[in-house]
Length: 288
Length: 269
Image 1: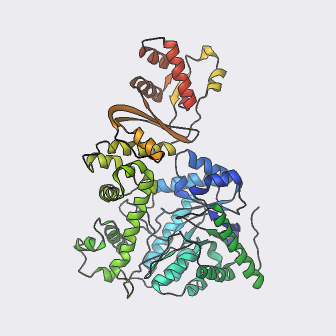
Image 2: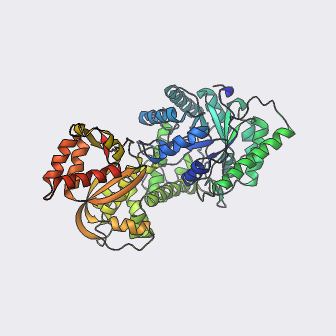
Image 3: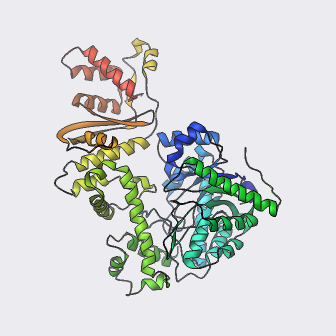
């Protein structure tokens, strides 16, 4: 995997059903969209009509939730086949999923569960990533998840675990800044130390989202504006990794599309401010 | 494959899906010593190991409940929040999600209601859930190019008899014991649903220009559409229609053809 194989897309927004009509009717000026792969892994109908309309006008990437790369069961070939079929239709700039497991015994929890951070699990997951990449015939990105529990068996930090898997699996990283913030609170680690330990050449995309505060823990709900502390952390990440495409996720209490545009533009403004303060050699430019 | 990882994931799966919660789920774990979860999951002064797993258990249930509520708004309107919540609790024990897409989480709800009627006062509920699920299945069903009136006119009349026909794949015909369509209409219009009529009816659910529709059909139209779905010719289907009417067969054929072409039901075979 080479970072230069991935274009810099700019500042995008997660495509959600609430906004389909608005986007198709008004063609808002958005750099790119991230689609949720499973929403479009269907035989036909309106979802695919919408998808074709979006992909005709905007760069798109595919983001999945059900690969279950950290499961101990065989990776579902039917899932991978449908994912590959969808990729032929979308021609995404990249495909991503999460560093997690989602079920056992053929059952799906529809949640993103964390793994024990051990060398054995690193080898297991990295092998599976290579299997997926061979099948899809392209590198994938894996995303750090928000978590609410850790395992006593863990012998590594989460960032060591993520970095090691990306190296051994030879895949990219989708670094979710909000997830780092949430997990840093929940497990009392230093979010900046996490970011500073991730290999620059592996990071292809950022996620930004809101979360909710439950007092004793933070929950990754994607139902609030991005918090100021997460924007600060994003600025820190931009300093280290720039240029990296950034994307706004909003999944509940979804506001009007304009709010998402404003949030994406805030990410752009922070990026510009940070890179003016400490310019790096920008080797990639936005598409379009 | 790390065997410890499989054991841990299996344990967590059982605890997260335990119908009465993580604590009761733990009590059923024979292989785990009392307090054993704390040896697997790290607790701290903020949250114990059980409380941490409980966060996932809540998310599991409520995420799926939200999806099923959205997919079955009329069933929800009939039952109300509390009874619907209890229905889904029982449903998830018997039909835990297995598909990679959460949109299939409620695909067996009608079967569950049929086998475990929530209350005798709602004998129509399984039919209502079947109709609601059919709307979703048809929404996602495969695409095809329907035959329209203009295309039909472009075909030379002498070629009509041999014209091969089939039905658009995005359709279902449901055999219902209750006319639950009125409930669905009421809920769609934000009105209070009334008790449905007990009636053996066939309900056609179909998609046209990516919108999903439904209407009750009489037994002859049901038989005609079933014949078309198996693959037929225009001449054969005309014979079926003519055999089912007492009056002018040409008028009946014209009427059917007009309806099906308008609705996008017919596809060239």
